[in-house]
Structures are given as C-alpha cells and as structure tokens.
Amino acid sequence: MNKESQFNSLSLQFPAETKVFYHNGGYRAIWLGNEALTADLFRLLKQSPGFGLDQNDYQQALPVLTNTQAYRMVGKEDSIFAELRCTDAALHFIHDVLYGNIAPATGYNGLNYFPACYDIAALLQYAVAANQLSSLPAVIEPRAPEYAAMKEKIVRYSQMISDSAFKEVKIVSTKADSANKPLLTKLFQLGFIDSARQILTDSVLKTKVKGVQKFFNLLSDGVLRSTTMEAFNVPMAARLRELNYALNTIRWLSCIKQSKKIIVVNIPSATLLVYDDGKVVLESKIIVGKRSTPTPLLNSTVTEVVLYPYWMVPHSIATKELLPSIKRNIGFIDANGYQVINRLGEIVDHYKIDWAALSASDFPYMIRQSTGCDNALGLVKLNFYNPYSVYLHDTPNKSLFGLNKRYFSHGCMRVEKAMDLARFVLKNNSIAIDTLSEKGCLQNQSPVIVPADENIPVFVLYNTAWVDSAGRVSFSEDIYRKNQFLTKSSGVSY
Image (cartoon, rainbow, N blue to C red):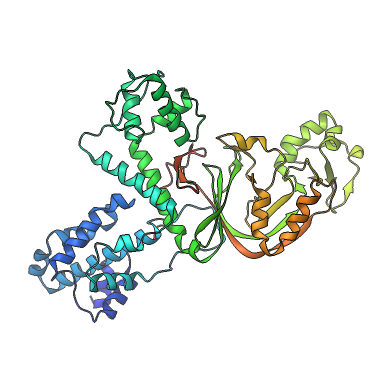
C-alpha cells in the first residue's frame, strides 16, 4: 500500500485541510511530542456537549489523546496515523464551532450555499503556534446575541442532565399548586425556579406556569390544559437536542449573514427575521402552512416584489374548495372577486359555464382573484423561484397574527409586516411602496412588478427551538412532526 492509499485509509473527515496544515507547517508532528497541547485538545473535545456538538464525532482521536505514549511505542507508522487523526479531529471541531455539524434539512436548495468563510487549517496553525488552542472557540464563535442565548440554555441543560441526581419526570396532575411535585421539578429543570423544593404560593406558581407557557409559545393563562401538559412533558434530553440543532443552524447561517442581507423564516415559531450586516433589522410574525398543506423547507433568492398581485388559485384549491361552493351558488365568484380564465388566458363569462359538469379531473379553467382590499395576497407579494409555487405575501386578514399558533395557510407565508419587508427589498425604490401605501386598496388595479434592488437570499427552515431579535429562546410545537427526522442522517453532514 502506497502512502496516498494509507492516508486515504484513515477515513479523515478533513483530508484536504489536514494536508494543507502539515504542508504549511513543514510536516512537523505537533501532538505526540507535546503533552500540554494534546491535553488542551482532549479537554476541548470532551467539552463538545456544552458547544451543542456531539463528542462521538471526534471519537477516533480520543484514544490517542488519552495515551499518546502508547502510539509512539508501537512504531513510526502508528505514530504518524495517530498524529493525523488528532489534527483531523481538531480541524473537525473548529469547523463545527464555526459552521455547525449539520446543514439544515431542505427540500429545495436554490442557493447551493455552503459556509466556508474561514480557513480552518490556518486557524488551527495560529492557535498551535500561539499556544491558544484552549481559548480558540471563544475567539471564533459567532458573536450574535441569538447564538449566545441559545448556547447559554445548552450549557445549563447539559450540566443538569449530566448530573447524577437528574431524573426525567412526567406531570400527570392538572393542579397548579405546590403539591404537584413533578410540576415543581419541571419548573426547576426548565430554569424558572431555583430549586425543586422551593415553596411557592399558588399565585406565584401560576405566574411561573404562565412564563413557561410563553416559553412554549402557548396561551399564557396559567392553566395546565392538555397542550401545556404535552409541552411540559417533552423530555429534557429531547429539549436539549432541539437546542443543539437550532444552535448549529445559527452557525450554518453565520457566513452568509456576514456578507449578505438575508431573510430567515422559521416555520414552527411562525416568525421571520431580516438580517443586514449580521444584525436583525426587521422581525415579523407570519402565518405558515397547516399540517395538511405544509410550508416547504427551501432556500432561494427574492428577485421581485409584485404590487397589487393577482391570486392565481392553485388547481387543488380551486377544485377541492372553491368548486363545491360555486356549484351551490354561482354568485360566490362575484362575491369574492374571482375571475375565470380559459386555457387561452382569456376571461370567460362564468354564468355560461356548466359548473355541474366539472370535477377535479375535468376542470379546464384557472381561477384568479382580482386585486383589491379582499385579495388573499393583500397588496404585496415577494417572489423567489422554487418548485412549490410558494411565496411571501401580505394578507387582508390580520386577526390571525394575534394567535400563538399560526398554522393556517396552504403553504405560502403571510407576513404581518409585509409592507416593511417589501420596503426593505426595494430600499432604493421606496417610492413604489410609499405610493402603494398612499393609494391603499385600489379595486381591479393591474399588478405592478418591481425588480428587487439586489437578490436577497431567503431561507425557510424548521427549528422547534428558536430565538427572537431580543435574544429570547423559546420552543414551538413540532407541527409537521419533523423532530424525529431532524438528525445528522436527514440533513447534510459535512
């Protein structure tokens, strides 16, 4: 076996970077002859849980680090292989601290985004030369407040779960009083009281339960109804996995957030964040798809804003939801501002159509809703290419934004601050939005397409643990039942 084959047989995670590291360092060994350095690396890898990382990812280096003398005694070749494994593990750890250990799951990857804004071989070289390996994570970790808030929760939960006295509990009683010991234990584990033995009055305990309900994005009334009980009884180990996944999503986004304006939609929390120069400049509630018509996971680029958009009713909605109403009363079309379009793109007289003869399998028309105050898309729509025909848009029905759980759409994303979002995308053409705001809802106004100032990436992600612009961490319902799949085997591992 030649040297290249032997090198490949090691199954290193970062072989190219390992080669660069030793080439730039004059091919000198750094680990096996330096007990202090290997001890620093060993301690870092053992601290992986506190960084939201999996210690098992670096497992092949740990035996080497615990007994470097044994490898030197076996022979030169074994020493070289052990040395390379340590370097690979160090590079792997640095990569994961910077970019996360998994790319978020997605259905459509229109950006082909891959975070690579740092030279990890050069970072390791610097840390070794300056004897600063142990402090390197603190230097390279993202500076964003959402990262710090998420990591703080991870550190706390990790330490608690690893404690020998820790035990998962289940709340069965719906009484919010001090006699409900599992409730007190959960409040302590979640960080809402200082001790599970703390004595609380009923009023204080109810306030604490309200705080946890906000933490879970639930109705905050202090009542232990079924939804609250279900959220309380998610095991702490599962909550930690949700936090780890979200933290690594934040890391994965860190490079593109530094270089571009981006829009980030998180489905479970039904929220939208806009970043400019790495900072949140706009936050909005949104409405996403219900479980039967989920919003797809994707990343793409916003290319245009449509003022006064038509709503081109999808075929499934037209035939399954509108057609039965039209058959019962043809006046339904006029009452809702719909138009019927034939295959030639012409508006046809809907009173001359034999609606009774039509069905989902025989429906040679398209239905569109005219522009105006009642249009389902409101006054603006933001387009980005994707194979699902979904987009970000305004809505005339603002009342649903007052709810904690906002899963009502057929897949598109309704934005509470749609006008602000459109103004951000059209910053250099804000007169278009100002004019729209002044004119308001014009009936039957022809759509106006305005190109975006620049192509702004949009990410539609799925994290049941997430954080808002103020750095507040919260958990949301796993509405699409994806948490069981959001592991390294479902995302894109590096």
